[in-house]
Image (tube, rainbow, N blue to C red; front, side):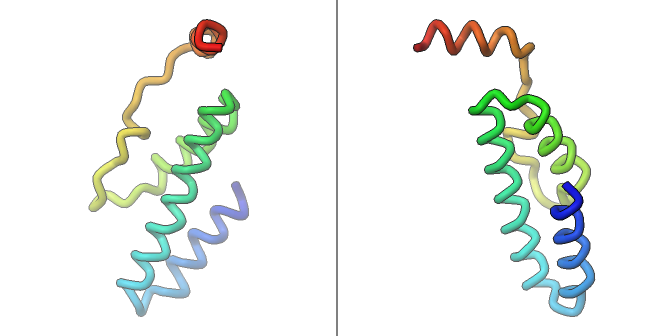
Length: 88
């Protein structure tokens, strides 16, 4: 997470004079983190999933609508284990 935080801070500082480019790059980074969160959920890597989700919740710009994945309910891991067994 420290590398991600460093990238975020660098984009905020380095592109401050270029707000449109800064916004594009921040959006790109957010998209990659959302994808990583989705991958962690699919892999049932719950510690990583919650790490990504907390980071996104803390950094998501207030002027952008939250993606559905940041508002979705996550059930107990055992329920996903049962679901995966039933579906396989």
